[in-house]
Length: 271
Ligand SMILES: [Zn+2]
Image 1 (cartoon, rainbow, N blue to C red):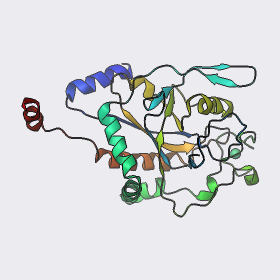
Image 2 (spheres, rainbow, N blue to C red; image 1 turned 45 degrees about the horizontal axis):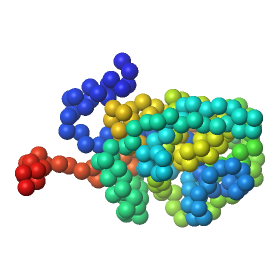
Image 3 (spheres, rainbow, N blue to C red; image 1 turned 120 degrees about the vertical axis):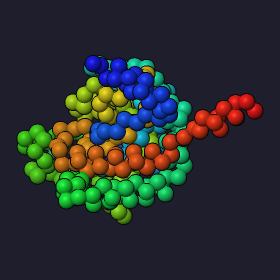
Image 4 (cartoon, protein in one colour; image 1 turned 90 degrees about the vertical axis):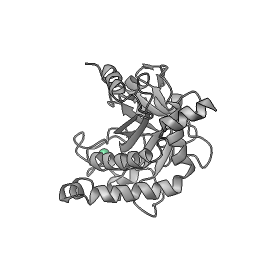
């Protein structure tokens, strides 16, 4: 059964659902370290989105996009990949409100997400092992032209770390939260050229798989834990940690979901 029909069934059984959420891992598209003449849309000064592995991107309306851009459609031009975004529904009004709440209290919410992440990691020995922060030294965001050395997916032990984009050290390893367009495709098998096309044509901060299929039925907000940078250096090291940070963020968002009391609503309608 197609996932869209399952979503409709879900709403049939839970008709009072106000906000749906898609929580997954995906690829980050940072703006930092990109030369201004590279063709990327890097935003204004101070908005370069220094996204790191384990950070979380939450869908939020920007410009033409209501949270999610369907980018399952790209063409090869002589000098670049051009992405032709297809229309998808926007996030629901309640989903927008839930995200806006978190955006307005970003600092406090970041602390809350870090607390939930620690609780998740300390749940038992298995979670402690699998959801631990991997290691800052393993988070290498390479220059687009520098190709992975060694077997695909095997880690970057043989790659030249001096080819990585220089980024300032962070004060903590707590995940940071970013808000903006999330690009969605059927699969995440993309290369740096396609990543560049997505960034240039949509300004997306992350790519994830499948959300566009549910935008019409659930109009969800999308939470994406960043596990790689959609390049040849992609590996599995950050998958579980990124899944844990996305889950912690989703838990914090649940606290912002509006709850409507039927009686209160009915009285407000009569007044
Ligand atoms: Zn590598």
